[in-house]
Length: 224
Image 1 (tube, rainbow, N blue to C red):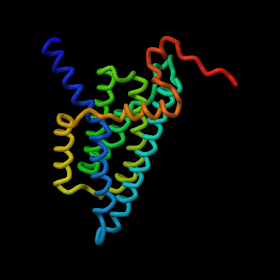
Image 2: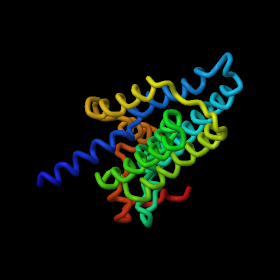
Image 3: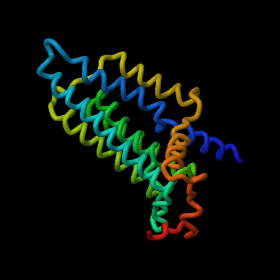
């Protein structure tokens, strides 16, 4: 591999880690807890929309995580996918990054921060295809799932000009977390957990593969 190729691979490998659940979920909890609890007392009138946005964010993330996980289990355990679209399940990295990073950006920097979060999540989406982890249909599908959760949250959070903003120390904490952890944290094992659940539910000894889907080797189960 050339030096340029090595730098290219290293860049996308670092970017893609920003979509891992083990990195994003703690950042999500920090942002959601601040929205839910920080604005109280004398700021109660402004705090109510912030708390409602936190609940929307949690509900949206739970919904999109469920959809992405079910799509993966459906393929890995039961062979349900689309060869025409090269689709074996929504990208969890793209979904998590797009549902979390834009809202974190808004909490820190308002609309400009949200736009920055969208840009970073888009890079995570591209990284999944560049690294060969997902097809475009899976990566873009996951991104659109996350975009719905982010839009649903931000449509409330940014509704008022005086939307709650984080104190100076929260963006610094998030920046340190998102910058340092991808280089130090061990690889995520969430995919292994999804595979284990899929095999348990289907009773198979091994998961279906993309090769089998594209080669037409997956046959529907016989009718009873």
